Amino acid sequence: MVAFYEQLEKILETGKGDSKVMAVTVLTGNLFGEKALVYANQLLWTSKEDAFFARYITQLEQAACSGVCIVGGERLYFELVQKEKQIVICGGGHVSLPLIRMGRMIGCEVTVLEDRQEFAARAEQAGASHVICAPFKEGLAHICGDPGTFFVIVTRGHQYDAICLEQIVKKPHAYIGMIGSKNRTAAVRAAVKKTGAPADAVDRVYAPIGLSIGAQTPEEIAVAIIAQIISVKNSGKETGGYPKAIRQAILSETGGKVSGDCQKVLATIISRSGSAPRGVGTKMLVRADGTCIGTLGGGVAEARIRGEALDMLQSGSAKHAALCQVDLTAAVAQADGMICGGSLEVLLEVV
Image (cartoon, rainbow, N blue to C red):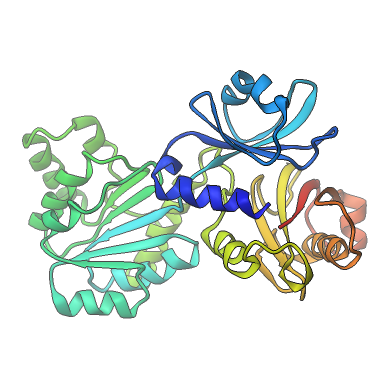
């Protein structure tokens, strides 16, 4: 199944990860575990040459969102293929440094734009994925934006804020936030509207930026901003996608091999009920030595899933996919010392 992840990389590299490319996995019948990639009423790739995917291409394409549904009498899991979320920070001052660290902690690529060499160097040292040291207008010309881009404007002056905002509101984005008092941000909005920028996009800017938690220090302000970004990011119905760290581990460590220590199991939550700890689409990659990339929420539930994954690898089973049910209902949870209820259904796939 390594070929599936090679196709994912090609899709993301060509920019189709910004569009509605769906990964489809069969959960029942003779095709259990087989996969397809669907886009614009076309099959981009299938793991097995079979008429099923082609026969139901219209229904596959019409899947409105990620999750489990029935197509052609079979139970299928749909997941949107998308690029990693990225945070673009305009300004490399004191607030930016903790923002960089926290942005990386929540799994985002972080790009910093800064026109001063000294501050650009600090952003690099803080762990930014990319740093563009150039005038803001010039730097933003290199940022295309997409539905998964979160723009944060924290420059050193309102004139620079206006330059950034004028460029950013014209780009695809998930979020735009701008630091400053109500009066300052209102003045910047008004100035940008006069340039002919789309007024509706300007009005949607989060300004003053961040959740209202009384933040004062740069670190506290960064917490407020990241919390607001998380709130916006998790307000939609998107699933976890295929994290870059997991894709890279599968491709670099597996190298096309399907035996021995190279084998791994990808665990994906495909359905949940009650107060299960993580959402649909959350993934964890389990290596043969027991180490993992990612988490399904920790605790006893994750330990059980990890154990099932290791059993698949160590037993030499011919199965390349399996479903695992984890009961977190009150009685079972209490017996195991867990505080959450509900249940998880997890797809285990050998890669």
